[in-house]
Image 1 (cartoon, each protein chain N blue to C red):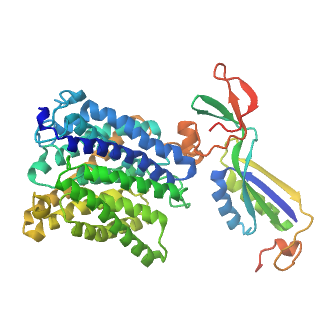
Image 2: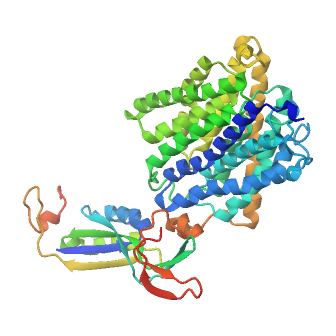
Image 3: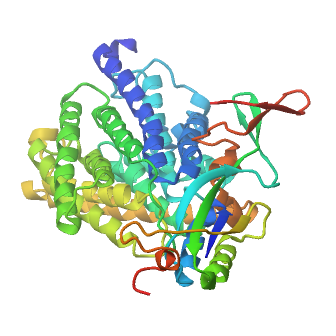
Length: 117
Length: 428
């Protein structure tokens, strides 16, 4: 059981959602984050004040999956998030100690497996 | 000459001119709310750019081509660069020609801004500036001459009170051509591209309606009966369109929508634009009800096509302008307008004159815009790359964002652009 964290461009978020859907990964949450990952900074000017934007808008996917779905989730994040330019984002896979489905009290594998599987 | 000037008329026309100019930023707000947040500024800026570009081209040659002389197709260059435009009224007028010029300039400006709605979220800003300059002269000034100057439609008997021909059909059918030449947004038809702020849309529509009282109420160039009639019809007709739109929304989706209501306000104002000073208040209300249906249908149909006429300029302006122009031919009443009757009051010829305008204006606007954009596109790319489109036009074209937070923004000193490690809390 792993937590797959994918940080992608906001404009690629829809593609990632589609890819996850195709990979039959049905449970995840997303949040808007700001980050810096070595991409070139944008320079913006507001009435004479020129600033370098060190942080870029990103979308962070968190996908809790059973071991069999780790590769599928990672592939979907890569496929949906990739444009080939610097700034496409990162994926982190971390071990997941314990999971509970609140409605039923199911734990671990049962909690991260979608209903009906 | 100044003896012919009516101070009351002049006072109203000064106010009306300012009201119409306000419609362009109002349109910017309306359009900005309808696009995604990453394109807010670019969309608004296209409308602001229309003021910049069209006011200059109008002063240079546009006004002259529209209002100098009685050529059938186009006017002369006698008033180019405001030559001869001063405090004396035009023949038959009661206001200084300078005021008349300024009032007409605001019409040219908003018409150029309207077309932006077809190409937002992907057209390059520079290309739009070039297009705006050429379109305001080659298309708007010509159509304005036909309908408002001494051109062939006006002399032929077509009635167009406040711009069904040059403004509404001119922008609507040009918008269709522009959408076809510039092409769809890359995500159109594949992803849901949603309005990012419905409150802007409603506020923009409300301000447009407010300004439209100057637009229609000023198109009699006086405080006379036609102006008063148009003013009141500008209240009644859009209100009826709103009611009809609510009903259509309820029938089709079981819910009355806010974006639909904002659209209905614009459609209603457009419907009454050509007809304002020519039809009775009762007919204006019927026009508002009935005229909602074609525009509603065009919007519903357009979203099923591959044509990304993004903000439905054709439906809101082209279609409604077309309906308004034709409607005059049926129900114009000399007892109300002092000019001419329509078909229902025994003058079938008026309908013929109106139909001619409803045919000629869309064809001219569509063909000219199509050719013009193809020509500009041959020397200058019209649209941003897919990558730029994905990033959003605000950052790419203007180097600014509408909703900047300032987190992580590092101040650059103006002299050497040297990086200074001082995060700026909020540059806005």
